[in-house]
Image 1 (cartoon, protein in one colour):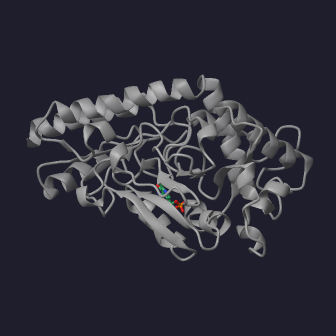
Image 2 (image 1 turned 90 degrees about the vertical axis):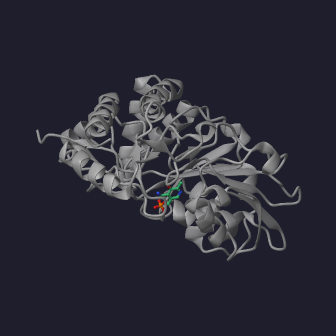
Image 3 (image 1 turned 45 degrees about the vertical axis):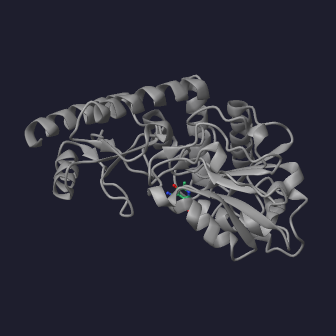
Length: 361
Ligand code: PMP
């Protein structure tokens, strides 16, 4: 088998090796079906069973109540930036957005095309190095909903608990930390997540929506932009991304087999702590996020100069540690260590960081 390197990419990102191996084993012909997952009809009994099992496993994994629909859409999390307000921002109302990074800003930008947006809090003046404190969040009790980004992929910050928004329906973009820890879905009106970080390949987006939200949707929306279309047709109104959903099913099953979300959370805490401890024990590395807001999924750090950062990334790549360059809007380095990222890969990075500091510090 071709040797695998450690992939720190922020997404599409590393998938669990047993999942890739199963996809490879079953790619030419699904057992008992005799056709590839890439070839079967989305109306076949086989695919109906795959999508249903995936939905059932997601419900089981995170205790999703029967008053929620579990849907698969396309268009990435970016399409949800539009679908959320198109479906839920009633005419004449405003929505509250908490801005903690580039992706929250994009969500605001799209919502403003549909209706009025209040910025309930923003940490932009601190270059998004933290999550706002409870006292900073100013919600409008009349707002249609409150939206936040649970993990800020680019800046490496993460909410440790849901923002306090009173009785407003709470909506979260969980693209980069879905199923990295237990989530109390009952606190949310709607959750969405592009699959390509913690759930599977690019091309599918998970939406978990409470039933009462579906009745808010205005009449006359384009079918593909209306959550009701997906809810009524079990995400099979048109041809869904069959392969991507199949892989999401395998990833969710893998998480269950690993012991579920608490187990994942424990592992993710251990992995992230190794890198943060290295950052904290040296003057050479500086973390971007303030300690109380640090993400378990994306660890951002700086070196003493941009030249050293370039050298770090390029030598790390040669050492089999790929994808450590930070996003252009924040610079520096970023290690994305989602659920499927192996513990040994984090240990390899920490050894590399020590050695790089010894030779360049
Ligand atoms: N939200 C977050 C938190 C993200 O990290 C990303 C992608 N990196 C997006 C939204 C946009 O996702 P997509 O590319 O699936 O539209």
